[in-house]
Image 1 (tube, helix red, strand yellow):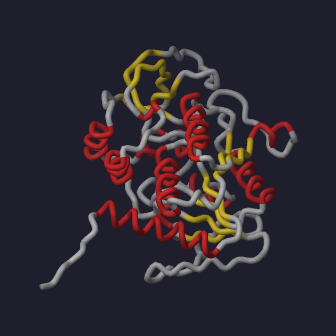
Image 2 (spheres, one colour; image 1 turned 180 degrees about the horizontal axis):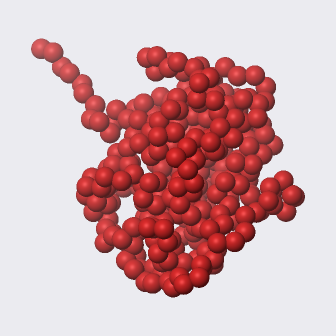
Length: 303
């Protein structure tokens, strides 16, 4: 009698991610997990905890803080880190502005999103991190589809898509010189729908803004931006109250929401399954800079 053991689609993705976390822990001296409180980083942290359970995480988490965050997300970040008993490193964009390392944008449409690159690279360098886990997925944006699971970054934190290592049979090359580091993407083969189905199956709590709620929003450039203390209104703009939720979370000045009445993971799964626009394409104003906007920022050292 032959007994077959077959993993479901989600369990296969989970097993791959767990393998990647363990491989990094065994290969690199000082890894760190980039954690913003967004759904992808939440799932990534959940998988990391599974990978090393019952032991604690063998690495800290780092938040690159623009200072223009949604309050609900920061509250969730702090509660989650305290619950898991892990060390939180915060690299602040405001510190870079105060020190004159970067110049803050001004005027209508100004955002600190691009300034995160300097804070990220400084946080990695100051703490001596040799690998940084990121929650990027290949279905988000075409520049991210060019990434390897182990993405090599040079001594300046720059990414060259033509200078990456082959990854055959899930074999990863983490070799690097002093000053260089590797970005690691355990969710590379996941989709937005996979993320939400996993959240549903694992009953993973998320910041409340991922579910439908009434909020004052400002229609702008075909998007709905949250009316927060960080958003400067343009001439003729008036906030309106709508029932919305966020598909992705980032800097509050450039992260839009969508009309929705989905208040449970099950309802979000149904909603995501029927959409034909990626979350970044629908809700991230910073991705509309140019056709190659994300790729240009990644070459500079962005996530």
